[in-house]
Image 1 (cartoon, rainbow, N blue to C red):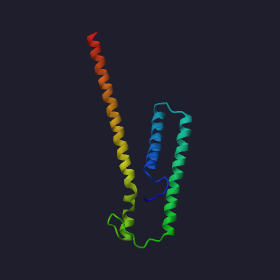
Image 2: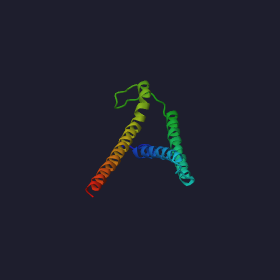
Image 3: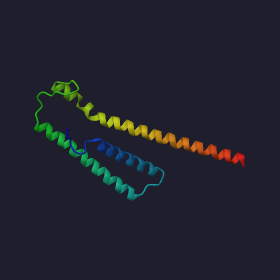
Image 4: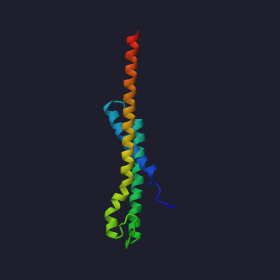
Length: 133
């Protein structure tokens, strides 16, 4: 088993994306005039925690990069030069974020589809009940 850095797993990615969703949702609520200061305080605290976590992750990466000099890196991906690994590090780092973002987007699309289809079915039932009466 392999131990990673805390707050760098799938749950943390979900947490970060949830904070972004909360922020966007509150911005939409401002337009709808349904937002309030209590919710904004909560969202602000969560954004602060998220920024602190990201800062700690980036800082840890920077410290590790300075503490461990890169000589020759062999990866499972077949990238066996330091230069090749450094060019693909961003792709390796962002792949879980991209996958999770796609999964969350698909989940939201399915939620919207089922919500709209249930409304349509209910309206059709209501129309048929009115025509029978």
